[in-house]
Image (tube, rainbow, N blue to C red):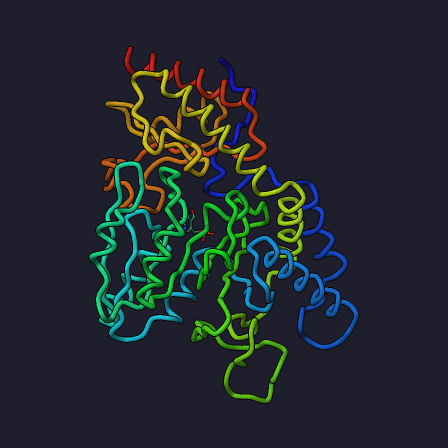
Length: 388
Ligand SMILES: Cc1ncc(COP(=O)(O)O)c(C=O)c1O
C-alpha cells in the first residue's frame, strides 16, 4: 500500500471535513458582517447580533430548549464545563462524577478539591465504559449538590444511561450537568424530556462548526456565578456584570465568525436529522468494529454493540506502543488518528490501558466504508510487520 491519501479518523478530537457552508459562512461573517455583536447600533453590529441570535435559536431547536436566551456561547466544551462547575458549586458541596470523565471535568474538580472547597466521589465504570449505577445509588451524601454525567466516552464511545442517572439524582433534589462533547449533533438530546439542568457542548466536533465555539445550556430558574465578568454592551453603567441571560455568562466579544460557521453546522444537522446521523455513524462504527475484530492480534475496547455507542473505537496491539502505531499509520498510510490517554486517564484505568493508552479511531458522518477498508488493510500490514 502506498501513501496517496489523507484519511481522517480523528473526529472525536475535532470533526473534519465540515459542510461547505460552514467554511463559507465563517469567511463571509469576517469579511462582510464584521460588527461587534451587542455593541453600538450600526448596521454591521446589528447584523452580527442577529446572526448570533439565529445560532442561539438553532442550538435551542436542536436540544429542545424553549428559551434561546438560556443558551450561552463559550469557546469549547472545556470552557462550558468550567463555567458550570465553578459557577454552581459552593464551599462544602459534594460532587459525583464518573470514571469516563474528561480532564475538562476532572481538572476543575481537582482544583476545587485542592482549594478545599468541595469533596467528590468517582463512580466506577465497567471495562466497556458504562457507569456502575448501584455504586451511584450508594454514593449520595446530604451535601451532594451535583452529578456530572459524561454522555459518551471519548475513549470507548459508551453512551451513559442518561434518563436513569438523571432520575436517580433528581429524586434526591440533586442537579445534573451533562457533558455532551461527544454526543451533541450525533445523538439526539432533548433537554426538556430528560430534564437536564446544565448541558455543556462543543461546536467543533459533532456540531460540525469551527474550533473556538461551544455552549452551555442553563435551565430556567438556575443561576450560575459568572466565571468571567466584563463588557456586554448592555447596562454599562453598572459596576457588576448583568444578571440577565445570556449576558450573565458571556463577557467580552464573542467569536462571531466561528458562530456563523456553527449556525451552518447546526443547520446541516437539523436538515439531515440527528437520528439519521446517529444511524449512519452507528453503522460505520459497527462496520469498523467488526473488521477490526477479524485482526486477532488487536484487543478492542468499548461496546461491541454500536447501538449504544458514539463512533469511537479504541484498540491496543500486544507489545506495540500505541504512539508508534499512530506514527506508522500516518507516515506510511496517510491515516490520521489519536493515540495515548485522550485526556481521560481514569477511563483508561477503568478499561485497563493506563498509562500506555490506546489507538483511537473515530469515523465521522463523512467517512466512507472504503476508507475503513483501507484502514483495516493498513492495520493488517502493520500487525504483520510488528509481529513478524
Ligand atoms: C468527553 C469530552 N468532554 C470534554 C471535551 C473537551 O472538549 P473541547 O475540546 O471542546 O473543550 C472533550 C474533548 O475531547 C471530550 O471528549
